[in-house]
Length: 165
Length: 165
Image (cartoon, rainbow over all chains, first blue to last red; front, side, top):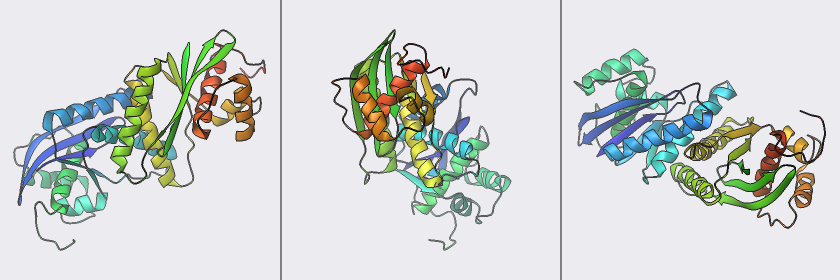
């Protein structure tokens, strides 16, 4: 089972692909899709869509996952994020891909063991779970964490038994 | 100049294409892109993207326009709308199309003459401005209104002189 994790945002969308077999996971690839802040919104959204399509073509995932959207107190930030997300998800739809959504808390719980884990803890655990993987940045790390959580939460693997299902 | 007006929403995205030459406008086509409320979000977003691309291919607009997004008090509604919008705008970006954004108030003012106009007034004015056009629904009407406002506001035409530029 190939799982694509996504961390959509307008300026930098992270993505990470893992293979999940039974209780084992392995890193396949990760990356970040950056858009030019000076470019028109429409162009940036198209770039995200196009780049996600390229990732799908390159890695043919069986399933995708992303975090549930965080509704920011600033409506303009929520709007930007949601538009980017819409563009990225539309790209996944082109392949008829199922996209699971998990809360940030559940992702951290699945990867680190506690929903209150900070970014450093998540990244430290990624090094253990995906040894040798060169992770290109914080957004790619978040995307890999979502992919791992999805593998775990979907019962395809069990990192540890924590009894939260 | 061919102008595409868009009224994006997840359940039903309206679109309308007009031709603007000097001070004259003419209706070319209008339609509504509906998505199945029971289908997964990703599929609905992809359908919007794909259908907008088909409209672009069919009518080759020189420019597009949509209303500035209305940030709803309900964050979940804003999220749905913004995701749909992101998918639709990404579709426009594929053609390198410029998309102007106008406030709802400015659209009403450009079409009817007052920013406080109601939907019935806008639709009545559309019948006068685009005689003979068969408008398929309220969302298509909104999209045509945006296209007319864009033609007007961009100085390509002048419906009436109201001195608001």
